[in-house]
Length: 54
Length: 290
Ligand code: SF4
Ligand code: SF4
Ligand code: SF4
Image 1 (cartoon, rainbow over the protein chains, first blue to last red):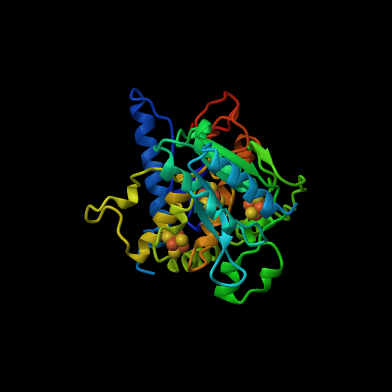
Image 2 (image 1 turned 60 degrees about the vertical axis):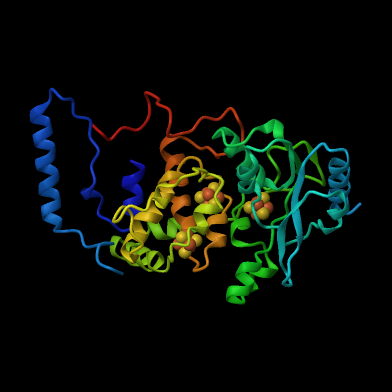
């Protein structure tokens, strides 16, 4: 929670970061979570923030 | 009696009687408007000790260097030094019984570094770190010199809120300019009483582990802030010592503000009964992991 807020504070889209409880018996939930996250990130495009030499 | 004289008297007595092995205080610096930490081991040297408006340095971190030696150390503590010491004791870096603390309530110190680097007239008012100081009175001491003072604490989170209110691109622009100025001297880490690991992850020299490429400054500064989250005592030393004026403190303030909002108001390094806000679990903690 704190990291997400800190990244947002530093100008990174909060949708790029996710922490979620998924038990090892919840295969479908895991797959859905990752698909949703991947879709959200695809929509944003690759992150170049703080990647290219400043 | 002037505070300086009282400090000298205590130092002389403690060193002569062998109660302490060394006394840490301040002496007049080589430059005008500047006082610098001094380590006195001989009773004959106590005349060097002074107390004035420039004793801004937080002395607590020095103690880590002596924690494994025999004998006691005495030192003068303002609010921020004492909180640093509480923090270091809580982190098992110092032993209370090896310290003799001379507490001095603090009116706010002037920041000569700002004066020299920017010709800033803040010399006339308390330095940046003192303007939002919540605990100018020592929270831990054996002897107290002087009268307790009231906290000035003007707008502790004013700048944090200003940054929060920018839009996401403006925030990125702001921080990319801040991070770009970092020269990775690690002064902000070295001075910090919450950063007490003897071997820091940053000193691991494996190739590509954590480079000094300017683009990696962001990950350094954000990681450092997270490492001290919940333990930062808001002494402002990290920002004060930064040679390039990176607003390191705003990252700490953001984390403090969020911790207070999420887990209840608390101040690190104030009392020993307090537990680390990120190392405990309550059933009513906010939970957005599900
Ligand atoms: S931060 Fe507080 S205790 Fe420390 S020098 Fe400034 S006013 Fe004094
Ligand atoms: S992070 Fe900065 S303000 Fe916080 S304890 Fe360390 S030096 Fe002091
Ligand atoms: S003190 Fe300033 S320049 Fe040095 S490492 Fe810290 S932020 Fe970077």
